[in-house]
Amino acid sequence: MTQHENHHDHRSTHRADVSTVTTSPVRRYRGVGVLALASVVAVTTTACGAISEALQDRSSGHTKAFTYDSGADGKADEGLPSWVPDDASDVRGVFRTTGDEMILTMDAEVTSLPTDCTSVDADHPLVAKPARGTLTADDYRTGSTLEAGWWTAGQEQDASLQCGRWWVGAKDGALFAFTPELKAVQIEDQPDPA
Image (cartoon, rainbow, N blue to C red; front, side, top):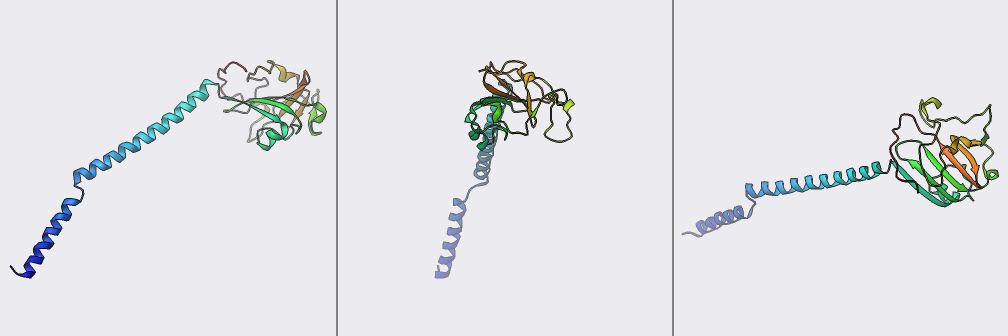
């Protein structure tokens, strides 16, 4: 055998060795299948997490409660309207995540409210003031549907001021406030008021 033939044989052998190292079609498809299965599991797990969250929210009537130590803290967090006095304390609220309604209570004086809050009277009755689109006052309910241990049913009707779209009043040394809910929003059962 010549040296050239020997070298040629070595290359053939080398090619054969390389082909045995590469992934066979069966192994390649098995790997793709494992990746596809892992993707399905990841998507399903994520979707189940989102569904679980939605069910939790639904079971609580799509409502969330919050508290702030002061009006300034709540406004800095963008959780309170601008008319809330900075020095208001013990600020508590509940809002519906699927609508416009919110109820608030806070320790603050009526005299600390801004001057653009208007008095309610026969010429300026309590009325829903839509914040967006082509909605009108007739698209809103006029009574609170939210519940809280510190909120007396119907107290929104005792509001004596309107601060923008908020109905505001005083009761037992504290301020309370309410924004009406759209009639189109479904009102669900809520958890027991805290």
